[in-house]
Length: 323
Image 1 (tube, rainbow, N blue to C red):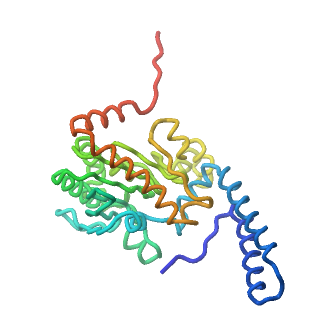
Image 2 (image 1 turned 90 degrees about the vertical axis):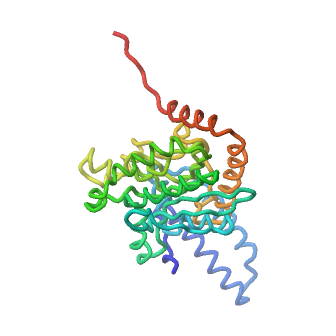
Image 3 (image 1 turned 135 degrees about the vertical axis):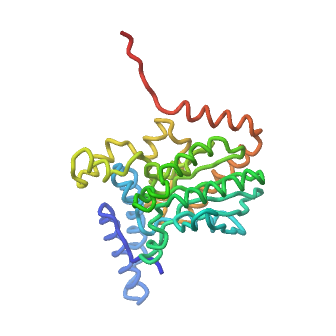
């Protein structure tokens, strides 16, 4: 079941133009008048307006786009970019976590291990998948699959899209923090290529728990931060309504993170966001993933590990004050 039609607040001018076009097309189909010229002009204006609006989004606007209910999720990309996906389940310790999906698939000339956070398309599925928020068994399931990929010398493709790790009491009792820390430690030592794609939300340790790799790609309207804008606003201003200010201060957009060297490349989205043209969005991301696969699989494991360690050591900037 698809989510109902949904529009973001800044998309109102686009919605009005789309309705005008639909009405004119309806009248043209009935033969009321020759409206081809007017329809063409409105479509041109719609395209121009869409590029104008999406070319000047604020950081908070991009957060809204990343959360759009029609935005493609991990399995959408897996189904469009790979063949023969075989999903694997369970952490072999407690249970399966539906918030994360993983398994082997074929992409181009490569057999790869895929691991990604998965949100739901409707309320029922969102509840089953816990809105993409992983439990500790989800991180342990991911680590089991990472080690399986290493055993069979297969590259790992990771898709990040989560509002954070699940913060419930049960998750904490089962070692949520340790599971995330363990993954970060172990991913730094995996002797196979790891390509990460941030496709929507990338919040806190929930994202970083499967987010250590050789290349980090980020879709243009995704966001990635140590904390969500709402969480930051609740701490700094004691009011989640200041989330827009927090988003600006956190510098969570792809363009910010590229400047800070936290990611390696921005993947452009179609005008109007990935939800407007999921096929084009997947093709753009897939093209870059395949190029990185071809490059990284030629690098010897020892050299790959050195490069990965250097990558994370070089992140961020600091200054020393002489006294």
